[in-house]
Every structure is written in structure tokens, then in C-alpha cells.
Length: 295
Image 1 (spheres, rainbow, N blue to C red):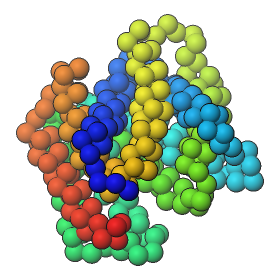
Image 2 (image 1 turned 135 degrees about the vertical axis):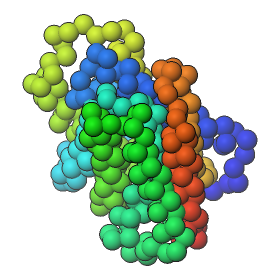
Image 3 (image 1 turned 120 degrees about the vertical axis):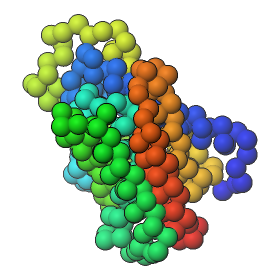
């Protein structure tokens, strides 16, 4: 791994912007599509750049190998479930809230790792970080201007979606010896297989004419935040390592809040700002508490 250069910080910022842009685009996509259709379009268009990379790099995609059940399970937990839950939740809450709620993934993963991964136990710094971060989320739920009895469950579903990412990450350790491109391509294939029949049986999107902005956002969600962003993430990981790449956790909720305001004129309340700061501080402490082990 090399010391980060200016180009590396630039790419990290671009990756953060891409992932943050997913939230307001999900909101726009919900104007015409249901959550199952949005999830399907994301994995379908997201698979294109990943599978093309596997083809040109001559990497075998083992979606239907003896480990197919792991790819199917991870595809469901790491793609199908969170993509559906986030799209369902964002329909009723502001996209900037979704960006903040989803940024709790490093906090949730620390809690889960304590119970399921050796040598990843809580310490004082991690515990402080978790308490600060989740206190920010609890405080966010007290914002009656943005979260009320009509969308409270939707906000909880977004949190559940972030937890699915964490569980999927732990399950991925079962096949961690395989190439990242192979694993990503395989779970995308299984996500498509799972979502295709559900999309046509439940929502039947072919019977409606979508708005142009919704269609563009849905395609963008697949190609850019799901497909291209993964390739960019992989480049950063291989060049600069996990610690450097993990800094996107701080930037995504910040950019998500800014982009929601710019493109959708979403309300930014004092509680949103306080929660955002608390989550970022919590992530900082959690990463600082685990930095020596990561190194």
C-alpha cells in the first residue's frame, strides 16, 4: 500500500459523492417505481460493469458452483433486502435522513463483530463511539418535523437495511478466499434471479409509463452507485488499503444531506445537523478504537 496522494483523495471524494448521490436518486425513482422494481433495476444495471470487468480480466464467475448457496444467501441479504428496504423507506422520508441512517453501518458492524468475529471485541474507545453514534440516531428520531407516526416505520426499515449490509458483510467472510470480482458478480447474478420474478409478479412495472427523471435515476442507481462505485472502491482498496477507503463513512452522510438540499430542496433542521455530527464523531471513535488491529 502506498501513502495517499492527491489523486487518491480525489477518488475517495468521488466515491463518497457517488454513494451519497444514491439517496436522492432513490427518492426520484420512487416517483414512478415500486421498491422491488428499484431493487431489480439496481442489481441488473449494476451487474453490467462488474461482469464486463470479469470478462475482460478473464475472471471466472462462480455463481452456479458448489458454493452457489452462499452467493444466493449473500445476494439476498447484501443486495435484495437492503435495496428493497431503503427504497421502501425513502418513499416516505427525506433522502438526507436515509443517508444519515445508513451511515450507522460502521457502528452496527462493530457491534456484530464483537459477537461473531475473534479479536474484534469492544474496548472503551469503541464503546464510546457506538454510544455517541447511536445517540445521534435516537435524537434524529425525535425530530417531529421530519419523522412522525406516518413515516416512523419507514425510517426503521432504512436502519434495518443498513443492518442487512452488516450481516451480509459477515457472511461474505465464508467465501473470503475468492476474488472480489467473482464474489460481487456472483451475488449480483443471484440478486437478479431472486428479484426478476418478484418484480413482475408484485409490481408489474411494464404496465405503466415511468417519468423520465425516475427512469434516469433508476438506471443511474444501477450503473453508477452499484456498479462503477464498486470498481472504484476496489481500486482504492488495492492501492491505499481498508483504513483509507473506510473514510467514506464520514463523507457519505455529509454529501447526502447537501445533495438532498440541492436537488430536492429537503429541509435541514437543527436536529439533523446535530445527529449528523454525532454519527460522524461516533464513527471516528469506533475506527480509532479498532485502528491498531486493522493495521
